[in-house]
Each structure stands twice: as C-alpha cells, then as structure tokens.
Image (cartoon, rainbow, N blue to C red):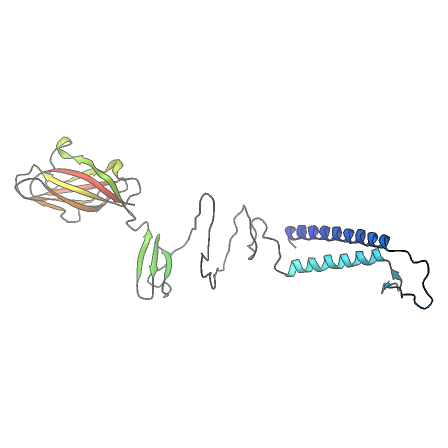
Length: 294
C-alpha cells in the first residue's frame, strides 16, 4: 500500500474515533437527563437490552459496544477507500489516477501503452494542458505520411511538420518545413540600394543582400519590392535565397527606358539574406522589404 494511502486511512481513523467520543458524550448526557424511577409495578419491568460477546458469552457495556461499532465503521471506511473511487491522488512522480486531481512536481511517464479519450465532452475540450505561465504539448517521433492511419481528420507529426490528412491525401499544416504566418510591415523598409553601396550588379554574378532588421530571425521568406535602374539595354534580375545556387529563374525583366519595378516573394537564408543575379546588361538594384513569413 502506498504511503499516501496509509496516511489517508490514518486520518479517517482519527476522524471516526473523534465521532465515537462525541457519541459517548451524547449518551452520557442523555442518561443523566432521564428521570429516576423509584418503583416499577410488578410484572411491568422492561427487559434489559444487553449485547453479548460471542467469544466470552459475557455482557458488553454500552461504551464497549459504541467503541466496537466505531472500529467496525472505520474498517468499512478503510476498505471502501481502497476499493472505491475515493482513492488518494498519485504520489509525486507516480502513475496518474483518473478521477483525482494529480499534483506532481516530478515527471510521470506512460510507457509501452496508449491514452484514448473515448466519447469526449460535447462542449469544451477533451484534453487540456493548463499552466498559468506556459502550456506545451511535445510530440516525439515521426509519421510516414504515405502509410499514416486512413482516418478523416487525422493530425500527425512527421518530418518535423504537422500534417492533416484523410484516406486520400496529406497536407502540411505547420512546422519548420512551412512558410509560416505572413507579417506585413507598417511601411516598406529599404534595405539595399546599389547606387550608394557597391555600384551596379555585374552580369553573370550574384550580389548578396542582407535584409537586416526588417526580417527577424527565424523567418523563412520575405516579400520585397525589386527595382532595376541605370541600365542601357535588355537584362533581368533573378532573386533567390542566399543559401541556394541560382535556380535559373527570372524575377524582373528590364529594357531600355525608365526604371522598372516588381514585387516578389522569395525564400531567405538562415542569416535573412537573398541573392540577386544579373543577366543581360548591368543595372543598379534597389530592394525594399514589405513583409516576411515566420
């Protein structure tokens, strides 16, 4: 028997003994308050109510009888506490006990099994992780999304992403492999102008541009306005992550005339940087950040 269960039983025994003492005081007071009969007519004597001890075949006094009844009640309460639903909560670090408030400062682990919540509440939440400062649920492991359970509405963890799926397809809901939420700046932030930096971009080479504080750490992508100016022919700019090699794309095409601009969405490197490749004829580049994904 766990120490906490023994402690609870001791507490219940003490409470029952206190009740027994109260009953004895009530019985004494009642006996004192009864009037004394000096004479009883012959033949009308009331039979004495006497309890007999089965082992010794001798009468048991009122106090002994009350005490024995108290012990029996205590024993019944102890058995009920062990067999019924009024068990004590789990010991610190021990197994959880359903139906009780389990308070623990040590970790409890469910190993080699599973937890199923059957017939959850119609309203409210079937599983709540509550903390006044922080609430975390950590899933450890991986799921092969190609062979995941074919159940509609399944949410699984696989490849460091959260997947939502049914019996025909899976889609990435969130995780490190996702673009994340879109954040738009209150106003565009100019982060690069080659006219006041290192001059026009060289044809066939990449220019690395740091997006700076306009894009916070942990961002996966950025929305930029890209402007080409100062050119004397036909060319293009291609924008991509600074951690990648040129993928062969074209972001902005320009020809003889005034400055040309466009909006573009691009991945960024871990250092929140992009690259711009210049092809055709040389030109100056201006980059303004409009928003980012994180």
